[in-house]
Structure formats: structure tokens, C-alpha cells
Image (cartoon, rainbow, N blue to C red; front, side, top):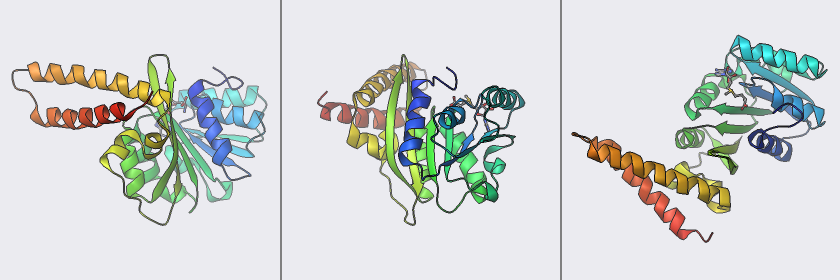
Length: 239
Ligand SMILES: C[S@@+](CC[C@H](N)C(=O)[O-])C[C@H]1O[C@@H](n2cnc3c(N)ncnc32)[C@H](O)[C@@H]1O
């Protein structure tokens, strides 16, 4: 992967930014690592400006090198800092991407950096794990999830969640948290593949816990609830 050829995961994030970003798109890519995503979007002439932020020196330096070597220093400002603190009001950021980390970390980054965000903004999030907790947080914090997708890349799967600020609190059900409110409507082939694999994985864990001398009954109950919901969704599928 490089800034000219993104992975299918980052390509999909990029497509969402282009599809839903308010023109002119001014992006903050938080946890940017090599800055491939903002570099690609600037090279494609899809965004006006980007902040490429990272809290760790190594990734920050990789981003600095990438942006310099691609000749993009006028449009991309690479900044070292924790989460959203790299964004200043005068940057006029309207779109934020946070990709390739756990859902809890993504949630904490938005929560603790809220005062750096404009009133209206688009979030394009790609959690590696912890999607239900992230969706619950978005719902509790007046964000509306209005698009999602599941990406399969070999043995890995990734979810992308697109949300925008709203004045209402949008309640979210257990199933919507687990599968995603939009994924449940779209029901792509990738969605079914992800949940078939997930069910098999949960069943293995469930059987292992059951065989323990003192099985953790809370964990078993939690797994049973999820497995029942997943089986229902898979049975309703027509793939
Ligand atoms: C696995 S990389 C993902 C890189 C890129 N976003 C992607 O999806 O390919 C996660 C990056 O997030 C950065 N990171 C973790 N916590 C952060 C925080 N609180 N603020 C900014 N960056 C953070 C890490 O240093 C790392 O470079």
C-alpha cells in the first residue's frame, strides 16, 4: 500500500469521504500513521486541505516523509498530538477520519477532544474491534449513523461507520449496535460472510468456557444473546 494505491479498507474510507464530505472537504485524519489516506485524497484532487495527526513520533515522522516526498506540504499539515487536539478552529475542518484502531480508543478520542470539533461535522470511522460500544456512544452523543459497510480482506474483516451530528438523540437497539443499523438494511455478501465467521468463532469460545471447571456465567449469557441474534440475522438472509 502507498498513497497512490490504497488498501481496500482505506479505499472504502476514502470513497465515503468523497461521497459525503461537504465541499470543499477539509479533513482531519487522526492516527494517520503514513498519511496515505490524506495524501491519496489530495493527489486525487478530492479535498482542499488535511491535517494528518498522530500521537506517536515514529508514525508522525513517516507521515512527514510521505507528505514531503509526494510534494503535498501546501495542502497537508502533519501534526504531532493526542487525538483531536491537533485541530484548531482556523483549520475549518468539516470531516474527521479515525481508522485502524479499537472502537473504545476512537470513542475516547472523540469524547476527550469534543471542544476541538465544529458544531457540524462528518465522522468516517473504521474501528478494528468494539463496534457495538462505538455505535452506542455515537447514539448517546447525538450522532446519526447514516452509512456503513463491511470490508473483507482475506481472513480479516473491517467495518466502516459514517456518522453526522444531529440535534436529536437517536435510540439504538441491541441488534443495531451489534450489526449496525445501515448494515442491517444493506445486508451485503460481505456482511453475511463476516457474521458466519463471527458465529463460528463465538461458538468455539462458548464451548471452551462451558468446559471450564467454573464457567463464567455472565460471559456465557452474553455469548448466548449475541449468538441467538446472529443466527436470526443469518437465517433471515437470502444469500
Ligand atoms: C494502526 S495505525 C492506523 C493507521 C491508519 N489510520 C490506517 O487506518 O491505516 C493507528 C495509528 O493511530 C495512532 N494513534 C493511537 N492513538 C492515538 C491518539 N490518541 N491520537 C492520535 N493518534 C493516535 C497510532 O500512533 C498509530 O499510528
